[in-house]
Every structure is written in structure tokens, then in C-alpha cells.
Image 1 (cartoon, rainbow, N blue to C red):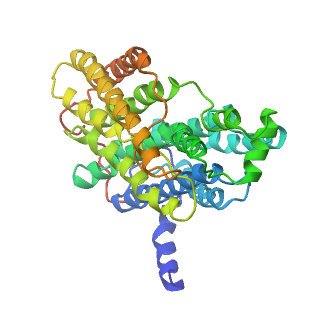
Image 2: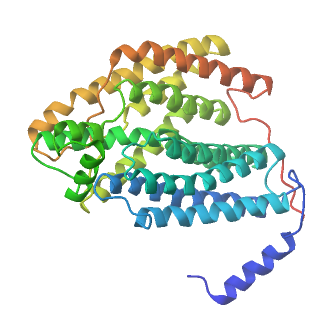
Image 3: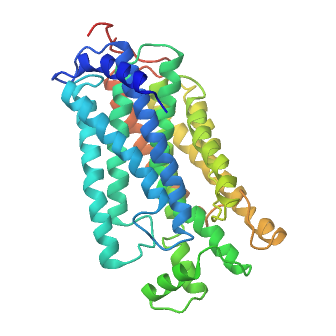
Length: 394
């Protein structure tokens, strides 16, 4: 904890910057770094809270003041503070970045009470894919998009710029992939039920059964754990998740960027897996397939022609994602048979392989859009784009 003297020194450093200004204002480099490292802290707190939150909701009945919600709220409070600072001073952002951050934060803050009202009226919300939840994801999507633009436009060239940009894209991927965790937790919870074990507390199962007007049986468990069609998981992952990796590779401009962004997110999920399971929370399948798909995105960028690259990339990245999902899905049976009710990191939600064509077409459309938009803005695919230098004067 900081001493009063250090807090006083920090306040004295920050006070001269607290002046009204328009977005796009020349920003001293030290202030720019403080603002965006503040974003890293805020998004990390939200990441930890949301990761714990999914596992919590597969074990306990919902509680507005649950520890994961409180941890997420601390990150949200820091997000609001940073949004106010950017908006009032104009430091660290251009107009487009500021609007994205403000709209994203606003949508998120509106979605929070709407989600609470939804739970008050409808009780347990048994899917991550509900309208109020999607508003939360949409708000976070816009917010992080604004942060990525602000850092991309303002950070000076160098290793720090590349690493931090990759970190922001990993947060972006986590938010986009977040609703898919319902199936990743759900498939293992349903498998545990089939093996005579349950992760959820009886009060949660009873509540879900009453809401579905069924006894606590397998059909109720399937409705609770896997509430969306089997094609949703792979199609959404390929179109939305891989589009994030394509954009990351395009803006970071280095071979391996898409792979490392995917590996960063998957690595985080792998690290927290034992931390959650060893403390009694349900396990989840891990989306290792994103790493294989990210690698093929990087390979596609070896092709110089943007639209040829998009067609080739959509084909091979979709094939890699579905191929890796087939392998993970095949691991479910042996894992269940080996350790009754104690599924491991391997496995994947049910896979509708026939959906690969539609997933590939969706990814192709998204990839072509990314190539077209970034090409019009003269963003090179092989090297970092020029940035707006941040002068070292107030």
C-alpha cells in the first residue's frame, strides 16, 4: 500500500494535467503510459472477475454481491475513472478512440441495471447468450476497441508498443469469446452428471428445474448446461474469435502475432483452471483450438495479396479450428472413462461439423472487411503502422 508521502507526490505530478481539453491533445509520454497501464490494470481486474464469475454460476445460485461481481466492479470503477479522465482532459485519445470508449462504457453501465432487473423478473438466467448479457459484451467490445485505437495511434514504436497492443487484443479476444464459456463449462458439467457426479449445488439445480418446469433429470441438466444448438459454438468461434486474430495480426504487423494473442488468452484459461478446480469450482474445457487457428492466420499473412490472403486464410484457419475441435471432442470419451466425474483440460462442446462451410463463409466476409478497411487507411500488413508521437511537454 502506498504511503501518504507517495500519494501526495503522485497527486502533485498529476494535478497540472487536470485541465479541460479536446480529444487529440498533445500528450506527454509519461502521462500516456500511466493512462494505458491504468487500462491494463482495469481490464485485468475485469478479466479475473469474469473468469471466476462463469465458474461461480455453474456452482452457486446467483447473488448480486458475489465475490466475482465485486472484483469485476472494482475494474469497472477504474474504467469509469479513466473514461472521465480521457473525456475531460482530451489526453491519450483521438476523437474516434474517445467516442468508442465513452459509448462502450455507457452501454456497459446501462446494461448492468437491465441485467439486474432481468434477474429480478425472470429469476435465474441460464445462458450467457441472453440479451442483457450481450449488452454487457457489446459495451466491453466498444470500450476495448477504443483503447486499442488510442494505444495504436499514440504509442511510440518499439517493443513496449507491440507487447501492450498484443495484451489489449488478448483482452479483446477474451470478451468476444466469453459467451462460449457457457458451453465449455456446460459440456463437462453434463459429463459429470452422466458419470454420477454433480458440480452445482442442489439449490441451483432445483431453481433451474423449477424454472424449466421439470424434475432434476438429464433433460433438465442438458437444458441448463448446453442451452444453444451445437453449431453455435464452432460457428461463433470461427467468425468472431478468428476475426479478432486477423485484426490483431493486421495491426501488430508481425508474424506470430495472431498465434501469441490466442496463446495468451488460452494460457490464462489454462493457468486459472487448477486455481478454480482445486478450490471446489467446476472445471471447463479449454479452447486450445484457437492456437491452431491463430497459427494458420499467421501463415496466411505470408501471402502478399490481401484478397487472396483472405480467401486462403478463411479456408485454412477454419479447417484448423474444426480439425482441432474434432481432436478435442474425441478426447471427451477417454477422459470420462478414465476418471469418473473428474474431467480434465481436454474436451470440447458438441461439434456440428457440417457448420464448417457457414463458419468459413462468415470468416471470409469478416476477413475481407478487415482487409478493405485497413487497406483504405494504409495500414501495412508486415510492419507496425506509423503512430502519432506524444510530445514530452504539458
